[in-house]
Amino acid sequence: MGRKRDILIAALILLALWQAAALLLDSMALPQPWIVLVDIGSRIADGSLLDDLAISTFRALCGIGLALAAAVPLGLAVGAEASLGRRLSPFIYLLYPIPHVVLLPLIIILFGIGNFSKIFLIALIVFFQILVTTRDAARTIHRNYFHAMQTLGATRLQIYRHVILPASLPKILTALRISIGTAVAILFFVESFATTTGLGYIIMDSWGRADYVALYTGISCMALLGFALYLLLDRLERRLCAWTRSN
Amino acid sequence: MIRVDAVSLSFTHEGEVSQVLQGISFAVEDQGSCAIIGPSGCGKTSLLFLLAGLLQPDAGTITIEGRPRTGTILQNYGLFPWKTVIDNIGLGLALKGAPKARIRTRVEGLLAEMGLAGFGRHYPAQLSGGMQQRVAMARALAIEPQILFMDEPLSSLDALSRERLQNLILEVWRDKRITTILVTHSIEEAVYLGRRIIVLSRRPGRILEIVDNPGAGDREYRQTEQFFRHCNQLRRILKEEDDGPQA
Image (cartoon, rainbow over all chains, first blue to last red; front, side, top):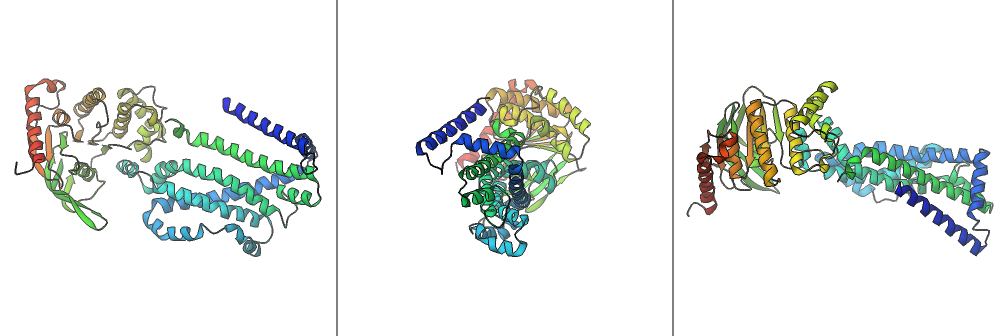
């Protein structure tokens, strides 16, 4: 497929640029990519990287999943039910622009320094991004679709299932795409302290030890994690929104 | 029997009340065909929505004897772009919890009957306007209605597909003995398809005249003198209305 080939070529060009920059700079702070790749390979082979990769993936996925599970039903309802929208939209309006990341101390006081606090912060930030997009998508569905459902004798729940959710899904997935970037960024933030596991910890720890190869191993794995989530989402979109490509 | 008795309807928009329909009374007998025509904005779509139960009148009553099954074809946005042709057609039955096997046989029969064989897995956006209206027709017929409500179903089609679909509507009415109520802004369409033609005034819509048109229902009717006489009669009524009462 042409698209896959193009992505591969772009990846190779980026690696070549990295290689060239590393040779040119000739600094410890920028190791050559093949050294980093070998380091990743050996750490995966001896199993030490797998645990960190797994825990980071787990935290990111749980955070996004939790946010989705809460934001999609709520967003659809707030968008589709006018009275609910009138009551809740002012709260969303006030709470959305807050930089939720500053709530970290509060979250740690409430939930401790374990995994749940980390997942909760990721979920909280992603929640608002998905909520606002979902609400706006559900609010702008043409009313003729509702009329058509009414003439077929649909219940409100059936209208959610056959109209409100599928009509909003393309925009929800777009929100999710943006949220993946956010989730990985917050993941780094929450893994940079009070933990000894995760890719964020590898980055902070090797930075402190001036182990630049390990530092780049952490950075590269974080990038790969984001990329893998992105690919997963692409797959999902192809399955769920085939109709948007039929126009 | 459908009986409309002294029905009025008004909309309130930003505190301003506008009268849409005023003192509408008429009746359509079982297995009859009725066309509703009038200048644009006269409230003919609202009248159809009232009949189909999508709106409630401010005053007057609409009585449909014997709680019949009804099918409705809306002007635009009636089909769901996220559902395939098969799923669109089968939706009415699926919402009523019909067994899958029964839905499948019914949908396959309708695909063949409506000339849609081979297009079942397409999405609406992949079909021409004429074919989309056939899908809408198939979906309305899927639940085997006794009354069929149509809101300008052919207004966006080219002349040729329009004529073909008019013949299809005629066949549906004659062969399946379905009561049909058709809103249209085309004089020829009203005369070809409506044994009873209700002519509405400009907004607020009142009944200007009810024209009995017993010749409708025959495919050769378009070539008869009676057809032209009725067309001219309607043209005269609508033109007088357009010129205003003084002219």
